[in-house]
Length: 318
Image (cartoon, rainbow, N blue to C red; front, side, top):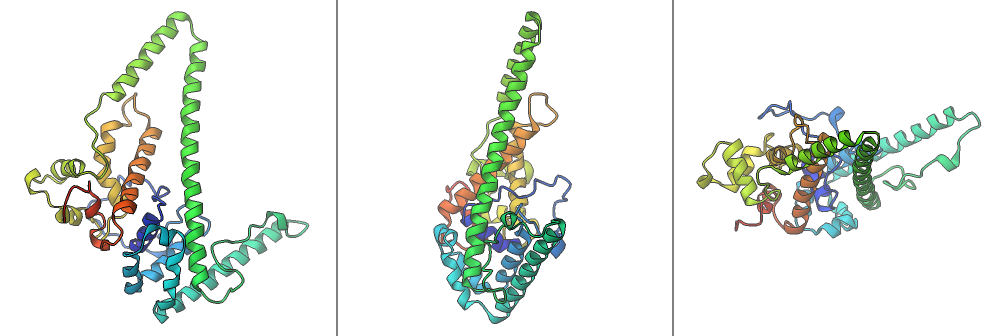
């Protein structure tokens, strides 16, 4: 189910930054089939609808194939929506039903808001949905797909921006708290605290060499240390197959994070005093963003199955 949504989100540079964190308890090789109840909303109010639309479109293999040969800008602008005209009838019918369900959901939300407001509906507080064509509540058309792509792009980029801002705020508050604590100490206590602080900073900097995320050296290290395979036998296709845990022909967010985990662990250990778990989580975001940015920059025209193979360092000639 995630295959096409990954193509959408990667190509439009959404970077999947709002995806759930790595599940440390997930067993290797466990192929857990997603159910409708497990659809991610990506932090979007209409996220479930987005996932369901993508799931429906994925059923049309010809449409999915066309996505492999378009640019990020063509998807981001909504230009690809014109291809909806050629989607199979059964898929179009399913999309029509999904839209009707989404319209019903939105109407229900408005009714609930009216019931909560004693004096009736506060029209200023009602947000007009931008992710679908509300003038046509009956069928899913080109304009609906265009609006969905463009709105999701904008909204997820905003979520990404907010996440970065929150992290910056966290870092500033953390530093301010430290400075404030120094002001309440004696000179001797302050010197001791500052010394310890500098030691922790230096200790954090003293870590094994960190490889470029998704580069040949980084993946070779995963191949050796995590997969326990001889370095000289490294093969991108085999590597891909080994880390495509659920066997769906794609590396989803969790599978990419599992590949990045050893690299992040070089920088952060939650059990170490000098390592901040919040900073570790942000580092995961940064590395993951980089991987999908590499996808945008280098993979237009490649087949979906080898989409990730071709970005690993761009050092291999396939």
